[in-house]
Length: 343
Image (cartoon, rainbow, N blue to C red; front, side):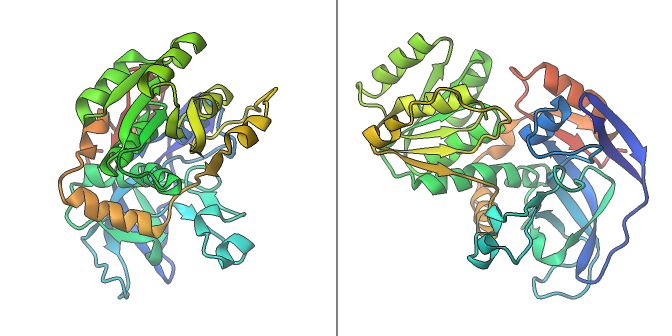
């Protein structure tokens, strides 16, 4: 079968590899659609803090069950599903406490282990979730929505609170959508005006903040919050500068959530600001089964049009072009989907 492989930073190839053989407790899946996420793009650019090469990328996907044994989940051949791609060890202190998303030996598909961008994959049955009739392209978006939703849940966002999301990529936009669904007043911030315009117009967000300079950022934060700062800020970029934006923009007693991942250090950080403002700072890593199940039901209700985040579609065999285009046009490409049904 064919698979997409990132051989090294900047080099993507379509390779012929062996079709996987299903083991007991696993299902054989045929890929339908796969989403290129920020971590995949980071792997392509050589900026992912966790990846090793060569690597088959991909952990956002929908698939059809080809083979599966009888199981307690009621999953059967022909069903359209998505999966939890974060493999936990089950024995570390985090796993023993139920924090499987923060497993100390976590292996995410497409990063620390081979990913989903192949014609067929196998998955443990307990990681497979019924798509409940969602369009397979929409089902592909559940995993990135889970990342965003988990971060918003960590912040315990409440109705009426002022929330700033820094980063108008897929994760940032979906975090803004999740916060808006909680009843918050949501501002989205980015350096790309086209992305801000698209996010606000498409998802009905309350405000946009163009981060064109430190002075402009400070002025706009004050204007949007009556000088108080935001109740919650969510970092969805993965840069020291944008993390500091989130620290600077919050009010006293606020919550800060870090979703973004970076290889870079934050230099000259005046950490006493955490004490001075009495800030609550939360890391947000991966997602839980609960997030997947809740979001499949939420999206099925039809009030959250996540499919509007898709801006570009490519055939699976054009994967190299998709990665190249996405890396070189980040300002006007939001969610890139690979179609495995037309190869």
